[in-house]
Every structure is written in C-alpha cells, then in structure tokens.
Length: 446
Image 1: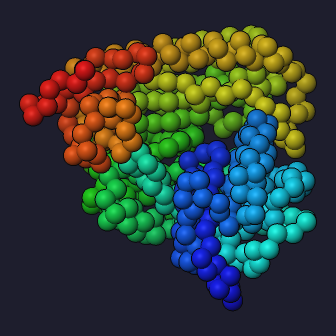
Image 2 (image 1 turned 120 degrees about the horizontal axis):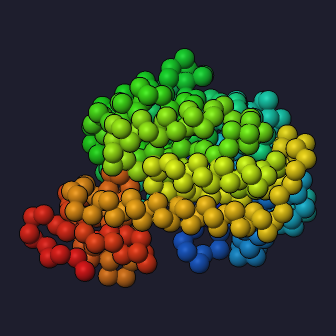
Image 3 (image 1 turned 180 degrees about the vertical axis):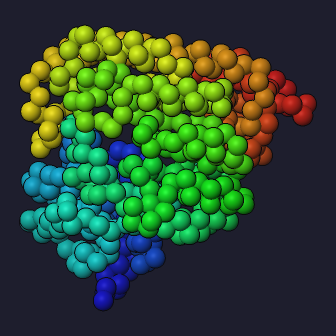
C-alpha cells in the first residue's frame, strides 16, 4: 500500500526531453501524481518533487539530459529529484554521479512512479531501479494534450528492429501495445474534453498488434469512427510497414490527415544494408509515389541520417541524389552520433565531423527547396485549418490537414476550431502562409 499522507500539500514539476512519446508519457505521470493529491508547481515556484523524463537518441541528447538535470537541481535545491526515460534506462550510473539526484527509474518502472515515492527525504546516494532490457514488458497508456490544440495518443512502445546505429530497443524493450478498444476509449476521452486533433505516437507504430493479435490497419479503421475528433495524424511509420492498403485507406478516410512522416535514414542501398534497415530505395520510392498518386497534396516528411559509419563520399552522393529526386515535402536531417553498445561501432569507415556538417547542410538546402516548392503549390487552394491557442504577438497559427502552417490575426473565437480557408501568400521568413477567410466576416490577413 502507498502511504498517500506523505503527498499532502506537495507540489511537483515536470521536465521532458526528446520525442512526442516522452511528452505523452510525462503527461501520464503527471496524472498519476495529481490523483495522489500532488499539485503541479506553478511557474517560479519551488517544487517538492521534480520528475525529469530524458532522451538518449544521440550523444548530444545525453549531454542535454545531464545539463537539464543539473539546472533543475539548482532551481529546486530541496526537491526530491526523479530521473527516468531512455537515458536513465541506458546509463543510470552516469545519472547517479550527479549530486542531488534521488531516484532513477528505468523504462519498466517509470509508469508506476508512486510505488517508488515511499519517502521524499533526500539522501546522499541515488537509488537506482532499472530492469534488464529483456524484462521490459509493461505498456502504460498515455494521452497528453499540448498547448497547440492537439492530443498525443501513445499506441505502441518498444522496437524489435535493432538497426545497427540505434539504442532505442535497449532503452524501451520489445514492441508492445495496448488493445484497440482501450485506445478508442482514450480517443473518445480526448473528444469529450474538446480535442479536435490526435497524433498517434509510439516507437514503431506500424508494428502495432504484436501483443494483442491486432493490426495497425485495424486500429486506423476503429479510430476513424470516433465522433468528435476532426482529424488523426500518423506520427512516423516505417516504410516497410506502410502498406498500400493503409495509404488507400488514409486517402478515403473520414478523419486521417494526408500527412506522412517516414524514416528513410539513407538514400543509398549499401548504407541501408549497413544500417540493417528492412527495405531498399526501390521500396521507399514506391511508397512515396503511391502516396502522391492517391493524395497529390499530401505532406510527406522524411528522416535522414548523415555521416553514419560506412557512408563514403560516393554513398552520400547517391543518398543526396535519391532524396532530391523524391516528391517529398521536407527532410528532417540528423547527424550520426556514436552510441556505445551498437553494432555500428564495428563498421570501420568513420566520417570526419566537418564532413558530417557539410553533408547535413547539403540535405538541409535540399529540404528548404522542397518545402518552398510544396508551400507555393498550395497557394490558392482551399483547406481546413485548426487554429491553436498559442498567441504570437498579434498573430495566431494553425495547420491545415496537409500540414501547411497558416498565420492569421489573433481571434480568440477561432481557437480550437476547424475553419475552411483559402491559402494566401507565403511568408518565407516565418515559413507560414496567410489565411484568406471565405465567409467575408474577416478581412484578408496581412
């Protein structure tokens, strides 16, 4: 039994680094503590408990994690400090060496944080509670709302792929998921709270169904029937798991947005083999062309990693030419970082840091060109935009179903509403397009 008396009049502060999945999970942790009577600390208030949810996707992420932990300890010197997340799972001893950390929880333990908050007294030594990767089996449902008028629904966790450069399977364990019925109930809960848009998150969401004998396609069909939600977005899906059936479904669905985020990682078949990815460039091109064939105005974002071990100048040239030839909307470019324990360290060819930087710039230039082209192609079209809460001076922002950023004069009556507009001119400085309202109740936005 948890002694909830220790939580009386206590406040907690939450800090999240990394992906949208982490943000969804931090939100779930916050609800746990709230139900136990712990209130969220206000801005500037000294908290009694600090929970830091970390990332470890790159060496830089580890460094940012350490910096964030030290900063938070300085801001809340008397707080009981809990560190969890991928960095905590992979390198708990590094975190334990930071003075002021009280409790370190691994991926299996973080979803049951109250169980470990038995005593909020600070001690000289950190307590580490981390399971071996093979013992990480729990799936904790998470539904979070951000301040941009959208919800994030965690549908899957873990990964079975073991790509040579990646530590995620070691940090999060094997692929697992919640049953579809439970996820539908959570989506209905978001709708009941006034949510209009839900982003489906996970580590490898296309692999959904391993623990429940269901499929990702079944999940999409079930969510498409949830009343009150205007649109769903698929956050990121592996190309080998993005079936033609799913693409056709999204094109004809009631609520799924024509917006895809697909990790390519390398546009060279030789490098894809070194990475142990489960597809080649021919399959990837087929998926992109299939999307554009069925949804010509779909937004397609693509992840690419530069400077991995084994990426020679020739292989990078192949990769750059390949991504340049694809009808995609934007590239998300990541610089390869050495990760201890990964198979990539056995690959002999190492790319110089300066060369990595040059390659990154090359791909970012291609991305900028593609995004400009896509945005300009949308001028004059009619789209539905969901306006957000956040105020930017006298302006407000929103996104169309195909992920075009729209700007308008701030109007509180439009917040969290889906409004049909005509897309006007492009502001290249802010990479946003003006909203031209169709009902003539508003003037053309400047």
